[in-house]
Figure 1 (cartoon, rainbow, N blue to C red):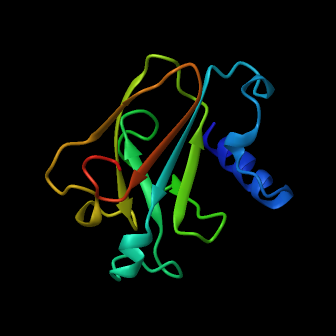
Figure 2: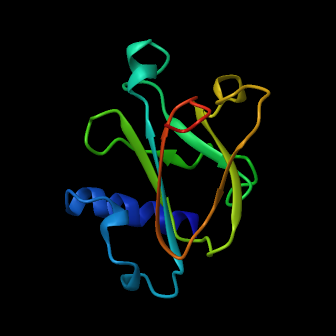
Amino acid sequence: MKNFIILINVFMIISCSKTPNDAPIASYQGVEAIVTFSVNMSPQIEMGNFNVDNDYLDIAGNFLNNWNGTEDHLIDTDGDGIYKISFTNLKSGDIIEFKFRINGSWDTAEFPGGENRVYTVTLGENIIDYWYNDVNGD
């Protein structure tokens, strides 16, 4: 399933300027919810904490990869410092916990030693916007 999602993301990036979350929910057979995580890395880039040429941003959580997010990279499709990834394997009502990490390292994870981010999935399209390492998510 993970490879299928990656393949869809690559196809959408190559074939058009829209991201996978732009497709209507009904176009995904049997999908109840699309969850797109969007993370603004601009302050981290400006502070030198994230190098767009060498670093990557991943998501680790309880909902997909059992807190091993090294294969779930967010992508900056527009070159604007906003990194995104979409998942279709979640259902309405799922309560997910997660953190974003730089280069798959827990040493560069958000809120070291702190709490996880938590989100409850709703039916349809879920677009979740964050700033990296911002507790309030705004």
